[in-house]
Structures are given as structure tokens and as C-alpha cells.
Image (cartoon, rainbow, N blue to C red):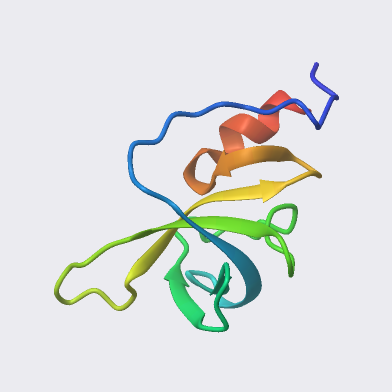
Length: 103
């Protein structure tokens, strides 16, 4: 049973990620984030429709990757969230697996 929330979990990722700060979540699949060093607000696809209360709260770091694909509604997709309450550097799609490590 792991209880040390300061222990980083390493999950490799090959895409270049953009560091942003979470602002709000208007619906299950969209979040709004602010790019570091900018006042621009980005509309981002969130692949996990779950509640994610432990990961998504104002001010938390969210890492995105840019996707240029015709017909896509958003240019960015959320890949990782950093939260001290659960784990650091946690991919949204791996949430159930990693959270089970802390139960």
C-alpha cells in the first residue's frame, strides 16, 4: 500500500507536451486552460469523462499536446495532470490504474 504522495510515478510519453494551468471544466469532455506565460485561454479536449475531482481544480497543472487534424473541434488534448492529492505526472487515461495504487 503506497501512502507517500510525494513519490513521483514515471510513465513515459513521446509527444511534446505544453504546460498549462487548469481554469474550469464547462462539460465532461472540454476543459479551459491557460498556457504558461500567456493570457490566452485554450479550449482543450479531455479524453476522460469521469469526475476527476482529485485532479481538476483551479490552478492545477495540466499538460497538453497540440493536434492538427481537419474536422477536430479542439486543437489540444489533455494528457497529464499534476495533483499532490493523488499522484504527480498522471495521464488522464491511466487514472483508474494509478489511483488503485493508492487505495
